[in-house]
Image (tube, rainbow, N blue to C red; front, side, top):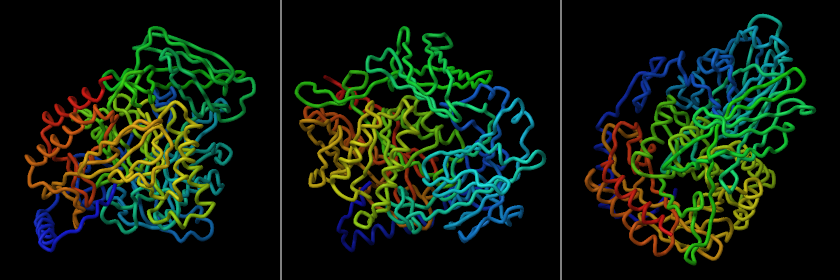
Length: 620
Protein backbone atom coordinates (compact mmCIF):
# COMPACT_ATOMS: atom_id res chain seq x y z
CA UNK A 1 0.00 0.00 0.00
CA UNK A 2 1.36 3.41 -0.87
CA UNK A 3 1.60 6.35 1.48
CA UNK A 4 -0.28 8.43 -1.14
CA UNK A 5 1.61 11.62 -0.28
CA UNK A 6 -0.30 14.78 -1.10
CA UNK A 7 0.29 18.47 -0.53
CA UNK A 8 -2.41 19.66 1.82
CA UNK A 9 -3.48 23.27 2.29
CA UNK A 10 -3.66 24.78 5.78
CA UNK A 11 -7.45 24.68 5.60
CA UNK A 12 -7.38 21.01 4.61
CA UNK A 13 -5.12 20.17 7.53
CA UNK A 14 -7.42 22.10 9.87
CA UNK A 15 -10.42 20.21 8.55
CA UNK A 16 -8.65 16.89 9.07
CA UNK A 17 -7.67 17.92 12.59
CA UNK A 18 -11.32 18.70 13.35
CA UNK A 19 -12.36 15.28 12.04
CA UNK A 20 -9.74 13.59 14.20
CA UNK A 21 -10.79 15.60 17.22
CA UNK A 22 -14.44 14.66 16.74
CA UNK A 23 -13.49 10.98 16.52
CA UNK A 24 -11.34 11.25 19.63
CA UNK A 25 -14.34 12.59 21.53
CA UNK A 26 -16.38 9.54 20.63
CA UNK A 27 -15.23 6.78 22.97
CA UNK A 28 -14.39 3.60 21.07
CA UNK A 29 -16.25 0.37 21.75
CA UNK A 30 -14.43 -1.32 24.60
CA UNK A 31 -14.57 -4.62 26.44
CA UNK A 32 -12.78 -6.16 29.39
CA UNK A 33 -10.54 -9.09 28.48
CA UNK A 34 -9.72 -12.18 30.53
CA UNK A 35 -7.32 -10.49 32.98
CA UNK A 36 -9.33 -7.32 33.57
CA UNK A 37 -7.54 -5.13 31.02
CA UNK A 38 -9.76 -2.95 28.85
CA UNK A 39 -9.40 -3.44 25.11
CA UNK A 40 -8.67 -0.12 23.37
CA UNK A 41 -11.09 -1.21 20.63
CA UNK A 42 -13.14 -4.39 20.97
CA UNK A 43 -14.35 -6.73 18.26
CA UNK A 44 -17.52 -8.85 18.58
CA UNK A 45 -15.27 -11.73 19.72
CA UNK A 46 -12.99 -9.95 22.22
CA UNK A 47 -14.90 -10.77 25.39
CA UNK A 48 -15.35 -14.42 24.36
CA UNK A 49 -11.62 -15.19 24.58
CA UNK A 50 -10.45 -16.82 27.80
CA UNK A 51 -7.52 -18.96 28.97
CA UNK A 52 -9.74 -22.02 28.58
CA UNK A 53 -10.73 -21.49 24.96
CA UNK A 54 -7.85 -19.73 23.18
CA UNK A 55 -8.12 -20.96 19.58
CA UNK A 56 -9.07 -24.57 20.43
CA UNK A 57 -9.39 -25.78 16.80
CA UNK A 58 -6.84 -28.18 15.34
CA UNK A 59 -4.38 -25.80 13.66
CA UNK A 60 -3.32 -27.76 10.54
CA UNK A 61 -6.31 -28.87 8.43
CA UNK A 62 -4.20 -30.11 5.51
CA UNK A 63 -2.27 -32.57 7.65
CA UNK A 64 -4.58 -33.91 10.34
CA UNK A 65 -4.54 -37.30 11.99
CA UNK A 66 -7.71 -39.42 12.36
CA UNK A 67 -6.98 -39.72 16.07
CA UNK A 68 -8.44 -36.23 16.29
CA UNK A 69 -11.79 -37.99 16.51
CA UNK A 70 -10.73 -39.25 19.96
CA UNK A 71 -8.63 -36.43 20.32
CA UNK A 72 -5.03 -37.57 20.51
CA UNK A 73 -3.39 -34.18 20.43
CA UNK A 74 -2.79 -31.59 23.10
CA UNK A 75 -3.52 -27.92 22.51
CA UNK A 76 -0.94 -25.82 24.37
CA UNK A 77 -2.73 -22.54 23.74
CA UNK A 78 -3.65 -20.93 27.02
CA UNK A 79 -1.80 -19.40 29.93
CA UNK A 80 1.99 -19.63 29.95
CA UNK A 81 4.43 -18.06 32.36
CA UNK A 82 6.14 -15.05 30.81
CA UNK A 83 8.92 -12.57 31.44
CA UNK A 84 10.73 -9.99 29.33
CA UNK A 85 14.40 -10.88 28.98
CA UNK A 86 17.75 -9.43 28.01
CA UNK A 87 18.84 -12.09 25.54
CA UNK A 88 21.91 -12.95 27.58
CA UNK A 89 22.81 -16.45 28.69
CA UNK A 90 20.67 -19.55 29.08
CA UNK A 91 17.10 -19.36 30.40
CA UNK A 92 16.53 -20.00 34.13
CA UNK A 93 15.56 -23.66 33.91
CA UNK A 94 13.36 -24.94 36.70
CA UNK A 95 12.34 -21.48 37.86
CA UNK A 96 8.90 -19.91 37.59
CA UNK A 97 8.53 -16.71 35.59
CA UNK A 98 6.77 -13.83 37.30
CA UNK A 99 4.10 -12.92 34.72
CA UNK A 100 1.46 -14.64 32.60
CA UNK A 101 0.69 -14.42 28.89
CA UNK A 102 -2.21 -15.88 26.93
CA UNK A 103 -0.79 -17.86 24.01
CA UNK A 104 -1.05 -17.50 21.03
CA UNK A 105 -1.70 -13.74 21.08
CA UNK A 106 1.34 -11.51 20.43
CA UNK A 107 2.63 -9.71 23.48
CA UNK A 108 1.68 -6.25 22.19
CA UNK A 109 -1.99 -7.27 22.01
CA UNK A 110 -4.51 -6.73 24.80
CA UNK A 111 -5.61 -10.37 24.48
CA UNK A 112 -2.12 -11.54 25.46
CA UNK A 113 -2.50 -9.83 28.82
CA UNK A 114 0.93 -8.20 28.41
CA UNK A 115 0.20 -5.35 25.98
CA UNK A 116 3.84 -4.25 25.82
CA UNK A 117 6.72 -4.95 23.44
CA UNK A 118 9.99 -6.51 24.51
CA UNK A 119 12.89 -7.29 22.19
CA UNK A 120 13.64 -10.43 24.20
CA UNK A 121 11.19 -12.61 26.09
CA UNK A 122 10.78 -15.99 27.77
CA UNK A 123 7.76 -18.29 27.80
CA UNK A 124 7.48 -21.23 30.20
CA UNK A 125 4.90 -23.97 30.65
CA UNK A 126 4.75 -27.20 32.61
CA UNK A 127 2.94 -29.99 30.77
CA UNK A 128 1.78 -33.43 31.85
CA UNK A 129 1.93 -35.60 28.72
CA UNK A 130 -0.59 -38.48 28.59
CA UNK A 131 1.01 -41.91 28.80
CA UNK A 132 -0.83 -42.86 25.58
CA UNK A 133 1.35 -40.38 23.67
CA UNK A 134 4.45 -42.52 24.23
CA UNK A 135 2.81 -45.96 24.22
CA UNK A 136 3.77 -48.56 21.58
CA UNK A 137 6.99 -46.75 20.75
CA UNK A 138 5.33 -43.54 19.62
CA UNK A 139 7.24 -40.28 19.53
CA UNK A 140 5.99 -36.87 20.65
CA UNK A 141 6.24 -33.79 18.44
CA UNK A 142 5.98 -30.21 19.64
CA UNK A 143 4.60 -27.89 16.94
CA UNK A 144 4.56 -24.10 16.56
CA UNK A 145 2.42 -22.34 13.95
CA UNK A 146 4.64 -19.24 14.06
CA UNK A 147 6.84 -17.30 16.48
CA UNK A 148 8.17 -13.84 15.71
CA UNK A 149 11.00 -13.72 15.07
CA UNK A 150 13.79 -15.96 16.41
CA UNK A 151 12.83 -18.80 18.76
CA UNK A 152 14.90 -21.28 20.75
CA UNK A 153 12.91 -24.09 22.37
CA UNK A 154 14.00 -26.12 25.39
CA UNK A 155 12.37 -29.16 26.97
CA UNK A 156 13.58 -30.03 30.48
CA UNK A 157 16.71 -27.95 29.90
CA UNK A 158 17.59 -29.55 26.56
CA UNK A 159 17.50 -27.44 23.42
CA UNK A 160 15.18 -29.18 20.94
CA UNK A 161 14.67 -26.50 18.26
CA UNK A 162 16.01 -23.21 16.94
CA UNK A 163 14.02 -21.37 14.30
CA UNK A 164 14.40 -17.96 12.66
CA UNK A 165 11.52 -16.54 10.64
CA UNK A 166 8.34 -15.08 12.04
CA UNK A 167 5.99 -16.39 9.34
CA UNK A 168 6.79 -20.09 9.04
CA UNK A 169 5.85 -23.08 11.17
CA UNK A 170 8.33 -25.39 12.84
CA UNK A 171 8.44 -28.26 15.28
CA UNK A 172 10.63 -30.84 16.96
CA UNK A 173 10.61 -34.44 18.09
CA UNK A 174 10.97 -33.97 21.86
CA UNK A 175 10.80 -37.64 22.86
CA UNK A 176 14.43 -37.96 23.94
CA UNK A 177 14.16 -34.85 26.14
CA UNK A 178 11.14 -36.08 28.11
CA UNK A 179 11.35 -37.19 31.72
CA UNK A 180 9.91 -40.64 32.54
CA UNK A 181 7.35 -39.16 34.91
CA UNK A 182 5.92 -35.88 36.10
CA UNK A 183 5.52 -32.51 34.44
CA UNK A 184 7.69 -31.57 31.47
CA UNK A 185 9.14 -28.05 31.36
CA UNK A 186 8.88 -26.22 28.01
CA UNK A 187 10.72 -22.91 27.65
CA UNK A 188 10.70 -20.73 24.53
CA UNK A 189 13.26 -17.93 24.32
CA UNK A 190 12.33 -15.32 21.70
CA UNK A 191 14.11 -12.41 20.06
CA UNK A 192 11.76 -9.99 18.29
CA UNK A 193 13.65 -7.05 16.77
CA UNK A 194 10.65 -6.03 14.60
CA UNK A 195 11.96 -3.30 12.22
CA UNK A 196 15.16 -2.99 14.22
CA UNK A 197 16.77 -5.63 12.00
CA UNK A 198 16.68 -6.44 8.31
CA UNK A 199 14.27 -9.34 8.59
CA UNK A 200 10.80 -10.03 7.19
CA UNK A 201 8.51 -7.78 9.20
CA UNK A 202 5.63 -6.74 6.94
CA UNK A 203 3.76 -3.70 8.27
CA UNK A 204 4.91 -4.12 11.89
CA UNK A 205 6.74 -1.18 13.46
CA UNK A 206 8.12 -0.40 16.89
CA UNK A 207 6.79 3.14 16.35
CA UNK A 208 3.60 2.64 14.34
CA UNK A 209 2.26 5.50 12.26
CA UNK A 210 0.49 6.08 8.95
CA UNK A 211 0.48 2.90 6.88
CA UNK A 212 2.58 0.99 9.43
CA UNK A 213 1.09 -0.64 12.49
CA UNK A 214 1.62 -2.13 15.94
CA UNK A 215 4.20 -4.90 16.22
CA UNK A 216 3.21 -8.54 16.83
CA UNK A 217 6.00 -10.25 18.72
CA UNK A 218 6.50 -13.65 20.27
CA UNK A 219 4.24 -16.68 19.87
CA UNK A 220 1.39 -15.58 17.61
CA UNK A 221 0.06 -18.87 16.22
CA UNK A 222 -1.06 -22.08 17.89
CA UNK A 223 1.22 -24.45 19.81
CA UNK A 224 0.41 -28.13 20.17
CA UNK A 225 1.71 -31.62 20.94
CA UNK A 226 0.82 -34.82 19.13
CA UNK A 227 2.00 -38.43 19.17
CA UNK A 228 3.39 -39.87 15.92
CA UNK A 229 5.12 -43.08 14.81
CA UNK A 230 8.92 -43.15 14.58
CA UNK A 231 8.56 -42.33 10.88
CA UNK A 232 5.65 -40.01 10.16
CA UNK A 233 4.23 -37.77 7.45
CA UNK A 234 5.63 -34.23 7.75
CA UNK A 235 4.00 -32.69 4.67
CA UNK A 236 1.51 -33.82 2.04
CA UNK A 237 0.75 -31.73 -1.05
CA UNK A 238 -1.67 -32.27 -3.94
CA UNK A 239 -0.76 -30.35 -7.10
CA UNK A 240 -3.53 -30.38 -9.74
CA UNK A 241 -2.65 -31.53 -13.24
CA UNK A 242 -3.21 -28.88 -15.92
CA UNK A 243 -5.72 -31.31 -17.45
CA UNK A 244 -7.76 -31.01 -14.22
CA UNK A 245 -8.28 -34.77 -13.93
CA UNK A 246 -5.49 -35.78 -11.55
CA UNK A 247 -3.20 -34.69 -8.71
CA UNK A 248 0.51 -35.12 -8.27
CA UNK A 249 0.97 -36.17 -4.64
CA UNK A 250 4.24 -35.22 -2.96
CA UNK A 251 5.23 -36.05 0.60
CA UNK A 252 7.93 -35.32 3.14
CA UNK A 253 8.66 -37.44 6.17
CA UNK A 254 9.97 -37.12 9.69
CA UNK A 255 12.38 -40.01 10.24
CA UNK A 256 13.96 -42.37 7.75
CA UNK A 257 12.17 -43.17 4.49
CA UNK A 258 13.78 -46.54 3.67
CA UNK A 259 11.17 -49.21 2.89
CA UNK A 260 8.33 -46.76 3.64
CA UNK A 261 5.29 -46.80 1.35
CA UNK A 262 2.43 -44.33 0.98
CA UNK A 263 -1.13 -45.17 -0.07
CA UNK A 264 -3.53 -42.31 -0.83
CA UNK A 265 -7.27 -42.47 -1.49
CA UNK A 266 -9.27 -39.52 -2.81
CA UNK A 267 -12.91 -38.96 -1.87
CA UNK A 268 -15.65 -36.79 -3.35
CA UNK A 269 -18.54 -36.30 -0.93
CA UNK A 270 -17.42 -39.40 0.95
CA UNK A 271 -17.15 -41.64 -2.14
CA UNK A 272 -13.76 -42.97 -3.26
CA UNK A 273 -12.84 -41.54 -6.69
CA UNK A 274 -9.16 -42.44 -7.00
CA UNK A 275 -6.17 -44.03 -5.29
CA UNK A 276 -2.42 -44.31 -5.69
CA UNK A 277 0.45 -46.09 -3.95
CA UNK A 278 4.22 -45.95 -4.08
CA UNK A 279 7.45 -45.28 -2.23
CA UNK A 280 7.07 -42.55 0.39
CA UNK A 281 8.80 -39.33 -0.54
CA UNK A 282 8.38 -39.99 -4.27
CA UNK A 283 5.70 -38.27 -6.43
CA UNK A 284 2.49 -40.23 -6.99
CA UNK A 285 0.01 -39.80 -9.84
CA UNK A 286 -3.53 -39.76 -8.45
CA UNK A 287 -6.14 -39.88 -11.23
CA UNK A 288 -9.64 -38.63 -10.33
CA UNK A 289 -12.82 -40.17 -11.72
CA UNK A 290 -15.44 -37.66 -12.89
CA UNK A 291 -13.33 -34.63 -11.93
CA UNK A 292 -14.98 -31.49 -10.59
CA UNK A 293 -12.84 -28.33 -10.74
CA UNK A 294 -12.56 -25.81 -7.89
CA UNK A 295 -13.58 -22.21 -8.54
CA UNK A 296 -15.05 -19.32 -6.53
CA UNK A 297 -18.44 -20.25 -7.99
CA UNK A 298 -18.03 -23.90 -6.98
CA UNK A 299 -15.28 -24.30 -4.35
CA UNK A 300 -15.39 -28.08 -4.38
CA UNK A 301 -12.69 -29.80 -2.33
CA UNK A 302 -11.60 -33.43 -2.48
CA UNK A 303 -10.65 -35.09 0.79
CA UNK A 304 -7.82 -37.59 1.12
CA UNK A 305 -6.77 -40.37 3.44
CA UNK A 306 -3.09 -41.29 3.36
CA UNK A 307 -1.47 -44.25 5.08
CA UNK A 308 2.28 -44.40 5.57
CA UNK A 309 3.60 -47.90 6.29
CA UNK A 310 7.07 -48.92 7.40
CA UNK A 311 7.41 -52.39 8.84
CA UNK A 312 4.75 -52.77 11.51
CA UNK A 313 4.47 -48.98 11.96
CA UNK A 314 1.79 -46.91 10.26
CA UNK A 315 0.84 -43.24 10.21
CA UNK A 316 -2.61 -42.20 8.99
CA UNK A 317 -3.35 -38.61 7.99
CA UNK A 318 -6.15 -36.76 6.24
CA UNK A 319 -5.95 -33.80 3.88
CA UNK A 320 -7.90 -31.92 1.22
CA UNK A 321 -7.36 -29.99 -2.03
CA UNK A 322 -9.21 -28.65 -5.05
CA UNK A 323 -8.64 -29.22 -8.75
CA UNK A 324 -7.84 -25.89 -10.35
CA UNK A 325 -5.37 -24.37 -12.78
CA UNK A 326 -4.19 -20.79 -13.20
CA UNK A 327 -2.23 -19.43 -16.15
CA UNK A 328 -1.66 -16.51 -18.50
CA UNK A 329 -2.93 -17.18 -22.03
CA UNK A 330 -3.14 -15.01 -25.11
CA UNK A 331 -6.79 -14.34 -26.00
CA UNK A 332 -7.79 -11.96 -28.76
CA UNK A 333 -4.18 -10.91 -29.09
CA UNK A 334 -3.81 -9.95 -25.39
CA UNK A 335 -2.35 -11.83 -22.44
CA UNK A 336 -5.10 -12.67 -19.98
CA UNK A 337 -5.34 -14.60 -16.72
CA UNK A 338 -7.32 -17.81 -17.09
CA UNK A 339 -8.74 -19.94 -14.27
CA UNK A 340 -9.35 -23.55 -15.28
CA UNK A 341 -8.73 -22.47 -18.87
CA UNK A 342 -11.36 -19.72 -18.82
CA UNK A 343 -10.67 -15.95 -18.81
CA UNK A 344 -11.39 -14.67 -15.32
CA UNK A 345 -11.29 -11.19 -13.85
CA UNK A 346 -9.68 -11.36 -10.41
CA UNK A 347 -11.58 -8.73 -8.39
CA UNK A 348 -9.87 -8.46 -5.02
CA UNK A 349 -9.75 -6.55 -1.78
CA UNK A 350 -6.56 -5.79 0.08
CA UNK A 351 -6.61 -7.82 3.31
CA UNK A 352 -3.92 -7.01 5.88
CA UNK A 353 -5.00 -9.40 8.61
CA UNK A 354 -4.85 -6.99 11.56
CA UNK A 355 -7.10 -7.02 14.62
CA UNK A 356 -7.50 -4.37 17.33
CA UNK A 357 -7.59 -7.01 20.07
CA UNK A 358 -5.17 -9.65 18.75
CA UNK A 359 -3.02 -7.54 16.35
CA UNK A 360 -1.71 -10.34 14.06
CA UNK A 361 -3.87 -13.06 15.63
CA UNK A 362 -7.63 -13.20 15.09
CA UNK A 363 -9.36 -13.55 18.47
CA UNK A 364 -11.29 -16.68 17.42
CA UNK A 365 -11.67 -18.99 14.44
CA UNK A 366 -15.06 -17.42 13.75
CA UNK A 367 -13.35 -14.04 13.53
CA UNK A 368 -10.72 -15.47 11.18
CA UNK A 369 -13.50 -16.72 8.92
CA UNK A 370 -15.48 -13.47 9.12
CA UNK A 371 -13.31 -11.30 6.87
CA UNK A 372 -13.16 -13.99 4.20
CA UNK A 373 -16.89 -14.65 4.27
CA UNK A 374 -17.75 -10.94 4.10
CA UNK A 375 -15.35 -10.50 1.17
CA UNK A 376 -17.28 -13.24 -0.64
CA UNK A 377 -20.65 -11.76 0.40
CA UNK A 378 -19.61 -8.42 -1.12
CA UNK A 379 -19.11 -10.09 -4.49
CA UNK A 380 -15.33 -10.26 -4.68
CA UNK A 381 -13.67 -13.42 -5.97
CA UNK A 382 -10.10 -12.75 -4.84
CA UNK A 383 -8.11 -11.51 -1.83
CA UNK A 384 -4.68 -9.96 -1.88
CA UNK A 385 -3.13 -11.11 1.41
CA UNK A 386 -0.99 -8.07 2.00
CA UNK A 387 2.55 -8.43 3.32
CA UNK A 388 1.60 -11.10 5.85
CA UNK A 389 1.35 -14.89 6.03
CA UNK A 390 -1.70 -16.22 7.86
CA UNK A 391 -2.23 -19.33 9.99
CA UNK A 392 -3.17 -22.50 8.10
CA UNK A 393 -6.84 -22.18 9.10
CA UNK A 394 -7.14 -18.85 7.27
CA UNK A 395 -6.28 -20.59 3.98
CA UNK A 396 -8.60 -23.44 4.92
CA UNK A 397 -11.48 -20.96 5.06
CA UNK A 398 -10.43 -19.32 1.79
CA UNK A 399 -10.29 -22.77 0.18
CA UNK A 400 -13.74 -23.73 1.52
CA UNK A 401 -15.54 -20.42 0.99
CA UNK A 402 -14.05 -20.04 -2.47
CA UNK A 403 -11.75 -17.04 -2.87
CA UNK A 404 -8.58 -16.89 -4.91
CA UNK A 405 -5.56 -15.43 -3.09
CA UNK A 406 -2.62 -13.33 -4.21
CA UNK A 407 -0.03 -14.12 -1.52
CA UNK A 408 2.42 -11.35 -0.70
CA UNK A 409 5.78 -11.98 0.90
CA UNK A 410 6.20 -10.03 4.15
CA UNK A 411 8.47 -7.11 3.36
CA UNK A 412 11.81 -6.20 4.85
CA UNK A 413 11.77 -2.83 6.65
CA UNK A 414 11.20 0.12 4.34
CA UNK A 415 14.32 2.18 3.82
CA UNK A 416 16.51 -0.92 4.06
CA UNK A 417 16.99 -1.33 0.30
CA UNK A 418 20.52 0.11 0.13
CA UNK A 419 21.54 -1.16 3.57
CA UNK A 420 21.12 -4.88 3.03
CA UNK A 421 24.10 -7.17 3.47
CA UNK A 422 24.70 -10.31 1.48
CA UNK A 423 23.48 -12.25 4.52
CA UNK A 424 20.26 -10.16 4.69
CA UNK A 425 19.52 -10.91 1.04
CA UNK A 426 20.28 -14.61 1.47
CA UNK A 427 17.99 -14.75 4.50
CA UNK A 428 15.16 -13.10 2.57
CA UNK A 429 15.56 -15.54 -0.31
CA UNK A 430 15.51 -18.47 2.11
CA UNK A 431 12.40 -17.13 3.87
CA UNK A 432 10.64 -16.74 0.52
CA UNK A 433 11.41 -20.36 -0.36
CA UNK A 434 10.20 -21.54 3.04
CA UNK A 435 6.89 -19.68 2.68
CA UNK A 436 6.30 -21.04 -0.83
CA UNK A 437 7.03 -24.55 0.42
CA UNK A 438 4.73 -24.19 3.43
CA UNK A 439 1.78 -22.84 1.45
CA UNK A 440 2.25 -24.94 -1.68
CA UNK A 441 -0.79 -27.10 -0.96
CA UNK A 442 -3.31 -24.28 -0.57
CA UNK A 443 -5.85 -24.39 -3.40
CA UNK A 444 -6.90 -20.76 -2.96
CA UNK A 445 -3.42 -19.35 -3.60
CA UNK A 446 -3.13 -18.59 -7.31
CA UNK A 447 -0.13 -16.27 -7.29
CA UNK A 448 2.90 -14.99 -5.39
CA UNK A 449 4.06 -11.39 -4.92
CA UNK A 450 7.67 -11.14 -3.67
CA UNK A 451 7.87 -7.32 -3.53
CA UNK A 452 5.40 -4.52 -2.87
CA UNK A 453 6.33 -1.13 -4.36
CA UNK A 454 10.01 -1.99 -4.04
CA UNK A 455 10.00 -2.21 -0.22
CA UNK A 456 13.14 -4.10 0.77
CA UNK A 457 13.93 -4.65 -2.93
CA UNK A 458 17.67 -4.06 -3.21
CA UNK A 459 17.66 -3.60 -7.00
CA UNK A 460 15.31 -3.76 -9.98
CA UNK A 461 16.87 -7.08 -11.08
CA UNK A 462 16.15 -8.47 -7.58
CA UNK A 463 12.45 -8.68 -8.46
CA UNK A 464 13.26 -10.70 -11.58
CA UNK A 465 15.60 -12.90 -9.55
CA UNK A 466 12.96 -13.64 -6.91
CA UNK A 467 10.30 -14.21 -9.56
CA UNK A 468 12.52 -16.82 -11.21
CA UNK A 469 13.29 -18.42 -7.83
CA UNK A 470 9.60 -18.73 -6.99
CA UNK A 471 8.68 -19.98 -10.47
CA UNK A 472 11.27 -22.73 -10.20
CA UNK A 473 9.84 -23.78 -6.83
CA UNK A 474 6.23 -23.54 -7.97
CA UNK A 475 5.59 -23.50 -11.73
CA UNK A 476 1.87 -24.17 -11.14
CA UNK A 477 1.05 -20.62 -10.03
CA UNK A 478 1.49 -17.07 -11.27
CA UNK A 479 4.23 -14.75 -10.07
CA UNK A 480 3.69 -10.98 -9.84
CA UNK A 481 7.33 -9.91 -9.55
CA UNK A 482 6.59 -6.46 -8.16
CA UNK A 483 3.18 -5.14 -7.21
CA UNK A 484 3.10 -1.40 -7.62
CA UNK A 485 4.50 0.59 -10.48
CA UNK A 486 3.01 3.67 -8.88
CA UNK A 487 0.60 5.67 -11.01
CA UNK A 488 1.75 3.86 -14.16
CA UNK A 489 5.42 4.91 -13.76
CA UNK A 490 7.26 1.96 -15.31
CA UNK A 491 10.80 2.96 -14.31
CA UNK A 492 10.87 0.24 -11.67
CA UNK A 493 9.41 -2.45 -13.91
CA UNK A 494 11.55 -5.59 -13.64
CA UNK A 495 10.06 -6.92 -16.92
CA UNK A 496 9.68 -10.31 -15.27
CA UNK A 497 7.00 -12.61 -13.96
CA UNK A 498 3.50 -13.20 -15.28
CA UNK A 499 1.82 -9.88 -14.45
CA UNK A 500 2.42 -6.17 -14.90
CA UNK A 501 0.90 -4.38 -11.92
CA UNK A 502 0.29 -0.69 -11.17
CA UNK A 503 -0.98 1.08 -8.04
CA UNK A 504 -3.18 4.09 -8.63
CA UNK A 505 -5.08 5.93 -5.87
CA UNK A 506 -7.95 6.67 -6.35
CA UNK A 507 -7.67 5.10 -9.78
CA UNK A 508 -8.28 2.48 -10.83
CA UNK A 509 -5.23 2.06 -13.02
CA UNK A 510 -5.81 0.42 -16.37
CA UNK A 511 -2.46 -0.98 -17.52
CA UNK A 512 -2.26 -2.81 -20.82
CA UNK A 513 -0.91 -6.34 -21.01
CA UNK A 514 2.49 -6.53 -22.63
CA UNK A 515 4.08 -9.14 -24.88
CA UNK A 516 4.64 -11.66 -22.07
CA UNK A 517 2.45 -10.61 -19.14
CA UNK A 518 -1.16 -10.07 -18.20
CA UNK A 519 -2.02 -6.79 -16.44
CA UNK A 520 -3.78 -5.72 -13.26
CA UNK A 521 -4.30 -2.83 -10.89
CA UNK A 522 -2.61 -4.06 -7.70
CA UNK A 523 -4.02 -1.29 -5.46
CA UNK A 524 -6.59 1.45 -5.93
CA UNK A 525 -9.52 3.08 -4.18
CA UNK A 526 -8.87 3.74 -0.52
CA UNK A 527 -11.98 5.89 -0.02
CA UNK A 528 -11.82 7.06 3.60
CA UNK A 529 -14.65 7.27 6.09
CA UNK A 530 -13.99 7.04 9.82
CA UNK A 531 -16.87 6.04 12.09
CA UNK A 532 -16.68 7.71 15.53
CA UNK A 533 -16.53 5.16 18.34
CA UNK A 534 -15.13 2.49 16.01
CA UNK A 535 -11.61 3.76 15.31
CA UNK A 536 -8.23 2.95 16.84
CA UNK A 537 -7.67 5.52 19.59
CA UNK A 538 -4.97 8.21 19.66
CA UNK A 539 -3.87 7.61 16.09
CA UNK A 540 -3.84 10.34 13.42
CA UNK A 541 -5.83 9.53 10.30
CA UNK A 542 -3.83 8.58 7.21
CA UNK A 543 -6.05 10.09 4.48
CA UNK A 544 -6.42 8.63 1.01
CA UNK A 545 -9.65 10.03 -0.43
CA UNK A 546 -12.11 11.34 2.11
CA UNK A 547 -15.86 11.01 1.68
CA UNK A 548 -18.44 12.71 3.87
CA UNK A 549 -20.79 9.84 4.67
CA UNK A 550 -21.89 6.29 3.86
CA UNK A 551 -23.88 7.38 0.82
CA UNK A 552 -20.83 9.08 -0.64
CA UNK A 553 -18.73 6.01 0.09
CA UNK A 554 -21.25 3.78 -1.68
CA UNK A 555 -21.44 6.08 -4.68
CA UNK A 556 -17.67 6.45 -4.78
CA UNK A 557 -17.06 2.73 -4.64
CA UNK A 558 -19.61 1.99 -7.36
CA UNK A 559 -18.25 4.71 -9.64
CA UNK A 560 -14.66 3.61 -9.06
CA UNK A 561 -15.42 -0.04 -9.83
CA UNK A 562 -17.58 0.88 -12.83
CA UNK A 563 -14.41 2.12 -14.54
CA UNK A 564 -13.06 -1.42 -14.39
CA UNK A 565 -16.34 -2.79 -15.73
CA UNK A 566 -16.64 -0.28 -18.56
CA UNK A 567 -13.04 0.32 -19.66
CA UNK A 568 -11.08 -2.69 -18.44
CA UNK A 569 -12.32 -5.30 -20.95
CA UNK A 570 -11.29 -3.31 -24.03
CA UNK A 571 -7.78 -2.93 -22.63
CA UNK A 572 -7.56 -6.54 -21.43
CA UNK A 573 -7.02 -5.86 -17.71
CA UNK A 574 -7.16 -9.13 -15.75
CA UNK A 575 -7.64 -7.98 -12.18
CA UNK A 576 -7.78 -5.31 -9.53
CA UNK A 577 -7.29 -4.85 -5.77
CA UNK A 578 -9.45 -2.39 -3.83
CA UNK A 579 -7.98 -0.92 -0.64
CA UNK A 580 -9.33 -2.37 1.64
CA UNK A 581 -11.67 -4.81 3.41
CA UNK A 582 -11.34 -3.28 6.91
CA UNK A 583 -9.89 -0.19 8.54
CA UNK A 584 -6.49 -0.74 10.15
CA UNK A 585 -5.33 1.54 12.96
CA UNK A 586 -4.87 5.00 11.37
CA UNK A 587 -6.28 3.95 8.01
CA UNK A 588 -10.05 4.38 7.79
CA UNK A 589 -10.46 3.25 4.19
CA UNK A 590 -12.05 -0.12 4.87
CA UNK A 591 -15.42 -1.40 3.79
CA UNK A 592 -15.75 -2.41 7.46
CA UNK A 593 -14.55 -0.61 10.55
CA UNK A 594 -11.44 -1.94 12.28
CA UNK A 595 -13.57 -3.57 15.00
CA UNK A 596 -15.71 -5.34 12.34
CA UNK A 597 -18.88 -3.97 13.96
CA UNK A 598 -19.93 -1.57 11.19
CA UNK A 599 -20.28 -2.39 7.51
CA UNK A 600 -19.86 1.03 5.91
CA UNK A 601 -21.23 0.16 2.49
CA UNK A 602 -24.50 -1.17 1.11
CA UNK A 603 -23.71 -4.83 0.52
CA UNK A 604 -26.32 -5.21 -2.21
CA UNK A 605 -24.98 -2.28 -4.25
CA UNK A 606 -21.37 -3.34 -3.85
CA UNK A 607 -22.10 -6.94 -4.76
CA UNK A 608 -24.04 -5.88 -7.86
CA UNK A 609 -21.23 -3.74 -9.32
CA UNK A 610 -18.63 -6.35 -8.36
CA UNK A 611 -20.49 -9.19 -10.04
CA UNK A 612 -21.05 -7.05 -13.15
CA UNK A 613 -17.34 -6.23 -13.29
CA UNK A 614 -16.33 -9.89 -12.97
CA UNK A 615 -18.75 -10.83 -15.75
CA UNK A 616 -17.51 -8.07 -18.06
CA UNK A 617 -13.85 -8.81 -17.37
CA UNK A 618 -14.29 -12.55 -17.87
CA UNK A 619 -15.47 -12.40 -21.46
CA UNK A 620 -13.11 -13.93 -24.06
